[in-house]
Image (cartoon, rainbow, N blue to C red):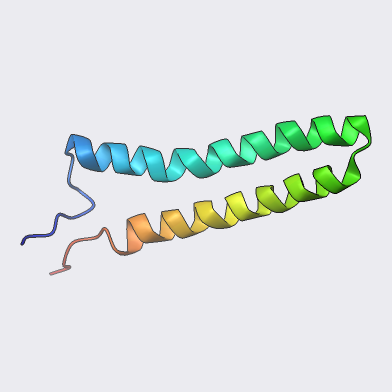
Length: 77
């Protein structure tokens, strides 16, 4: 079975790249929005949980970026 490289311009690879980068960005945006609402309402435990979710989203974004561009490359010759 042949493996495609990161230069593969198929629709499937495009959707994979968008999904793996959009999900952590959406998680971060939701954490910021709901964390701000929780802090404005004085619910500090929930704001802290949203801060943790934001850190998780940043870490997930870094891991997804690393996976896409580390293992997505073709053989270098």
